[in-house]
Amino acid sequence: MQNTTSKNRYNKLAVQSNVANALNAVDGDKFTLDSRLEADSFLLARWPLCDVRRFDDQRYDWLMLIPRVPDSVEFTDLSELQQQQLAVEVQQVSLLLKEFGTGQKLNIGALGNVVSQLHVHLVMRHAQDPAWPGPVWGHSAAKRFDDATKTTEVKRWQALL
Image 1 (cartoon, one colour):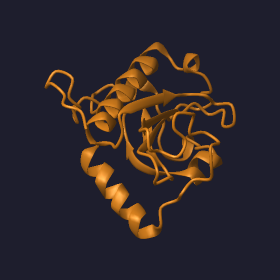
Image 2 (cartoon, rainbow, N blue to C red):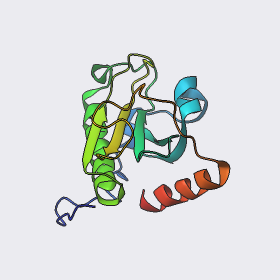
Image 3 (tube, helix red, strand yellow):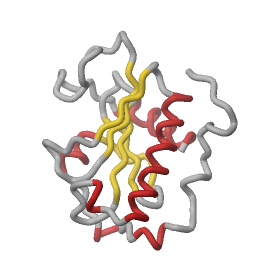
């Protein structure tokens, strides 16, 4: 864990702004999550722009942000306001992971080579993780959570989000 100053500390209220309507993020039946993202992760929270999801691999503290913007593939597919909100949400998850996650290095990536739907991975890394120092993507099969551990993990992150 890292000590943070109050200026840089994760702020639970920062993403709970009044900009959600202006963001044109959609809810319910209008938003379709890519089936591969759905199969490989589970929902933790809905923020103004993004769904916050936990990647289903218990070896890493690995969260994802998925903007609820139809047909978004690239960062540039978002409006300027949406881009700004995504940056705010990335910052908030980053601070959360750095304070409460396990690891010394935060990796942030939005590759989209396999799943084109825009999504941002935020992964805490440490020298003892199985993929270190290489990338976690495609390194080895995920070690999935069993139902009881998944429930505990959801409660853990939801209390922080």
